Image 1 (cartoon, rainbow, N blue to C red):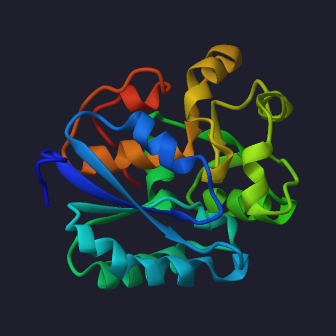
Image 2 (tube, helix red, strand yellow):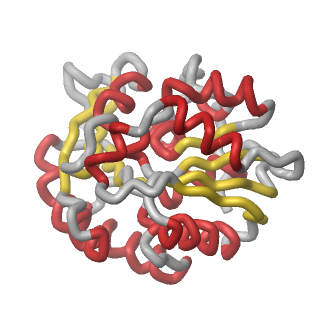
Length: 241
């Protein structure tokens, strides 16, 4: 519930232990009057990400949040629409009535809100994870002709990817027949680069942390226009599937 540190709302944000950028990125985007409270889960076993997140939800209730945000791109883990529906139900049960937002629901809502149809995906780790995300977004009805990945072996090493590597990866999937670029894997950390990327690419860039926080704010009824983070965060309305 709102308090004197978050008179417009308190958000519990669940992020991996093996992550150095998501906390400062969410704080960078935080509008006045919102209190971001960070809770962490262990991402060392990528085959058990869903279980790790579910275990962390009860603890995140202890700051009396208005909203719980699950910030990881679980669609990179051999995911499906059916599995996401089940997972969402499990999260809601753990949340005990507190609204809960997942990055995996926020990104499609963001894509629809900017009328994306044909997208290219960048993710930080393996080909398997990137192809899983590609299949997931195709099952949602998006065309995904191009995808790339940065071959990072461990989650905690993603923070060491350079700006030059990120720019090169986007150039690799920069094709004229793409209308939107989607970045998944919140540990990569490109929120502060979105304006620059959109200027270089000439098209919208949906980055998971920005999309998730934007969607959370809008679902909470906050319509502040947030400058400096690309086209998406200037939009005050959402469009779901």
